[in-house]
Structure formats: C-alpha cells, structure tokens
Image 1 (cartoon, one colour):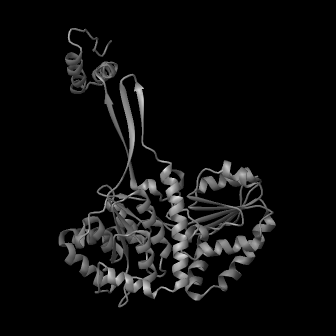
Image 2 (cartoon, rainbow, N blue to C red):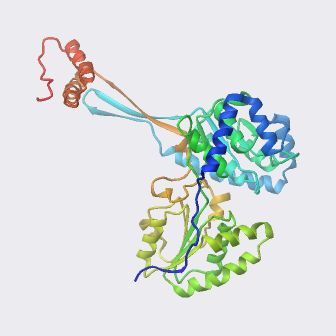
Image 3 (cartoon, rainbow, N blue to C red):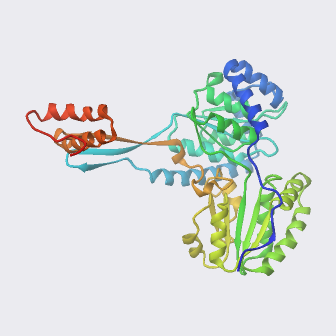
Length: 435
C-alpha cells in the first residue's frame, strides 16, 4: 500500500536566504579589510561585549572555578567517551605503501591540518557538548593549534562550563566572540591567532552562511541547516518513549523537523495524542520551539512493512535516526542514509548529542545521502606519494606518453619521453598515440 501520512509538514525548512547572504558578505568584507578593530566593533554591536577577547590562563582558571564539581565530572566523562571513540576512528586511518608494479612504490599518508577553528554556540543554550565534540576530535586528529570560539554574554563573557570543556579537551586558545565576527577572526588570523585551515561546529544561519562563503579558502565540516530527527518504530515500541524522543528533538528550534515512520497505526495515533501533552509540559523557553516544529514541520507516516519503512527513512536521509523496533541487526544492515544511528530503546539522540562518544556535528537537510558527520578524518588530509626505480618507471612512462598524446597533451608526453631517453639510451620505444 502507499505511504499513509497521518500528519504532513505544512512548511519545509530552508537554510539559505538572500538577505542573510548579503549581511554576512558585508561583515566578512568589513572584517577582512579592517582586521582586529573591525571585528571588535562587530563584537560590541552584536555580542554587546567589550571584555577580554582572548582568554588568559587566569581567566580560564577563574571560569573553571565557577563550574560545579558535579558538572565538571560530567564534562570529563563525556570528554573521555568522545576521545575514546575518536581515537578508535583515528586508528582506522593508516599510512601504507604498495608496489604497484615492480619498482614503482606508491603510498598514502595521513597528515592533520595545522590550525582548527571550533565554533561553539552559546546563545539561547550553552552548547557545552559542542566544545567537547569539536575540540576533542581536533586534538585526537593531531592538529597543532586549536582555537575554540564562543559567543560571550553581555557583561558576563563566555559561559564558564564552555570554557572549562574547551580547555580540558585541548583548546590552545579560547576566543570570546560570536557569530560571523568570530568565524572571521579564526579564518583571517586576527588577534594573533593562526589562520584556520578548517572551521567546524554548529551555529545559527549567519554562522552557517559565513562558513559557506569562506569554504575554499578554508575547509569546513559541513553546511548545517536546521537539525532533524526520524524515528522508525514498530508495534514493539513504547509510544511514550517515542513521543518523548520526538519532543526532545523538536525543542531544538521552531523549524527543526521530526518524523515518525511506523507500520503500526495504533502506535502512530497514540504518539500523536501524547506529543502535544508532552510539549505543553515543557518549560516555556522550550515549549514554543517544540510546538512550532511539531505543528509546521513534523510528519507521521504509516508504511505497509519494515522494508517500506527503511526505504522511507533512506529517502529522508535524516541527521539523527532512531530505531525502536524488533530485529535491530536487520535495521543496522539495511539502513544506508543517516548521520548517526541509534539502535533500540536503550539509546536516544540526546545520548549522542551529549555524552556517549559519537559526534553530534552531523549532516542535515538530506546531506546524509552523501556524507557523514564530524570525525577525526575531517581534520586530516589523506595524501599520496610515489617513488620508482628506473626500471619501474619504464612501463609507466611508455603508457603515460601514449595516453597523453591521445589526449592531445604533448607537453605531458615529453616529460615521459625525456626520462626514457635518459634512462634507456639506445632503446627504441613506440610512443605515438596510434600505437
């Protein structure tokens, strides 16, 4: 049977805007031309902050002293988990060499980038976990200089817990500056910082647009849109847990889609009954976002069987994908398009967001069709090298000369010719395109 939409989105998230692009372009141009002074002017305007920009060791220690002991232990627990997972990822990238043909050796080498700029949101919510996710992975990858950048609050500065997290995870500098001006400062190497080779971390639409515009002169992790989450649930799922998980992700923002895909109509109907009740029970600061996201962007889809459920999920390519259904191994083997996968009721997206070890900087807006999330690999250049004996170079030079001439690239062909004449004087080679 066709998919049955019990609830269909009335709006669709858009992460781009011509007005946003115009604003961001102007700010980047001003700061590139005006340097530190221009960045400070934008910080005063948008952050409403005129305090210390690059935090001193004394300021970092003072911030750490403000973090309650229990929260410090939680941050350290999350850091240890993220570091352990990142170290396991790093171990999967190995340098190697292989003899392609006798006498020709080619190899791979993984080289971490020098300077990483890690943006840590600090507006409505203090994204402690983003400091852990971005700085830790950069450190494990082997970046030699890591800057953590986070918006300061007016008259207060960067949240102490963010400062503590960035510091223990390995940040070399902590920059109290938000938005486009913070991203620009890391990219252009302001305030004595090294110019960033890569920018990572989530942010609002202005931060995302700045990263988009700067991509090319620096690397980026991805261009992030509104966060999204999909739950696959069958008749074995607990509707209260499913509904709670949907609400938990809807609170991210008014335009954060959440989707339920199931083959059990009674479960779908019960979840739809529960979600508004759970939203009404949220604190007011969270309630408005969750209510708008559920009203305008959420979908509930009933499928005929689990294969149709999996196909629907792959078509959506969600950032976060949760499976609350029987036979988890089948789902793990079948599903192909997601940023991060949470198998079984015993896991939930919030675990991955905060403390379980996998990274929470993930592809949104369907980008999971072609990419994964932030990892140590994002900070590493996988480069190649080769060397050869003269005998090893001989067949390669012959093939190169003929292929180059067939393509019309005579200059390329002659770089092979000259070696053959030097290394094998007196020998005759057929190096014409026609063969």
